[in-house]
Length: 113
Image 1 (cartoon, rainbow, N blue to C red):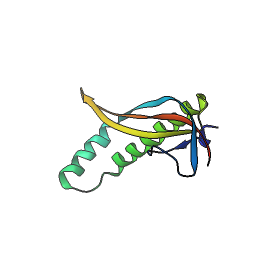
Image 2: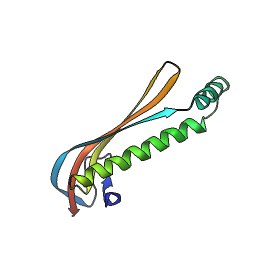
Image 3: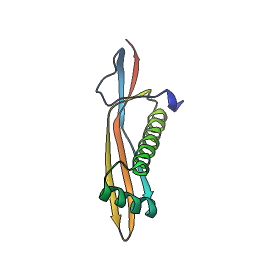
């Protein structure tokens, strides 16, 4: 059911009409970054180039967070989330590095226009 929830960063959906604004919805995801990945990322930063492992971690975090946002919205009775904002942060210290991602938006009910 939650896979049917439409997600958009826009304030509206082309071809749909918002019939009910339900509430603000959010999901938070924290991912630990592997120490070896961090070490190789440092080498990559030094020598230049793209870091595939970091890119994959960012992609995995985004997908997981948006899936949770869909589920949260569906649980509220929404069939769409508009105005989505993704905020990424890194938390590090004590030899550990964590990726923190928050997705927020407005859970709404929409119908075809």
